[in-house]
Amino acid sequence: MNAMGIISMNSPGLAKGKMKDILEAQEKLHHYFHENVKFHVSQAYNQITLGIMRDNKLLNDDDKFVWTKGAAAQCPLPQDVMHLLDRIVFPYFFKIFDEEDNKEVIERVLSNILELTADFGPGVFAN
Image (cartoon, rainbow, N blue to C red; front, side, top):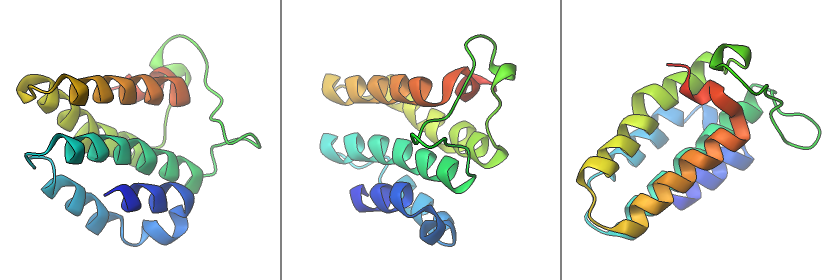
């Protein structure tokens, strides 16, 4: 899963054709018992999201997404990013909050939400 996240982030064009398989593989690991697996699944989702943004050519020369402080409507994200966040990433994160006992895993998920917000602004919470 670590490699899938890194490949998706750095070679989004290559990963795009296999994105369904990548996401299915990630989802199969959602319920894996070991905390390191959950930790890295969470991290890979952030990397996949970044890769999709790169593939949509929404990052500037500094590899940053320019977003505006304020309401989510002021900095909309592409439909494929919102689909990933709404249907896979946030449901997984919320399930971790409800069911996980390991504080390190919960801390990593919170850090990932912070990273998503810092990278893509309030648009990640549009829905």
